[in-house]
Length: 113
Image 1 (tube, one colour):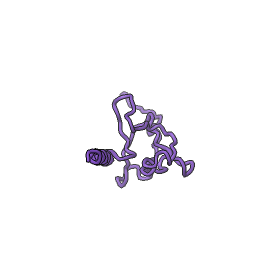
Image 2 (cartoon, helix red, strand yellow; image 1 turned 180 degrees about the vertical axis):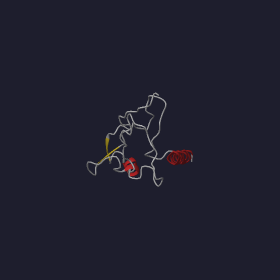
Image 3 (tube, rainbow, N blue to C red; image 1 turned 45 degrees about the vertical axis):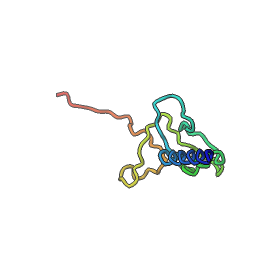
Image 4 (tube, rainbow, N blue to C red; image 1 turned 120 degrees about the vertical axis):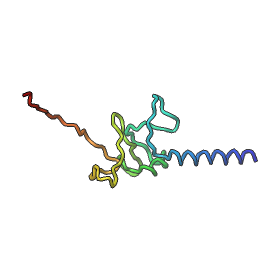
């Protein structure tokens, strides 16, 4: 009886974790260690067989070489921006794409008189 109850409790905790933080969630942390079960978004390639749940969540959104591997997002040195779906902002941007440098070299002049 005890072992069955313990198993039920573990399963319920896992369900709650998945609801609160589903596989594929990106989260910022204010410390240098990587929490257990998390990865750095460093653009690495992963094998579908090794991470089937993560592949099920993000698929080939961030890159595809073949059907056996997928890429996680590379957010090193980037700011994360919310997806502008149906907002009229960045209408031509595709989900999962990167935005290039929007600040270009420019010159200002002003009249000193």
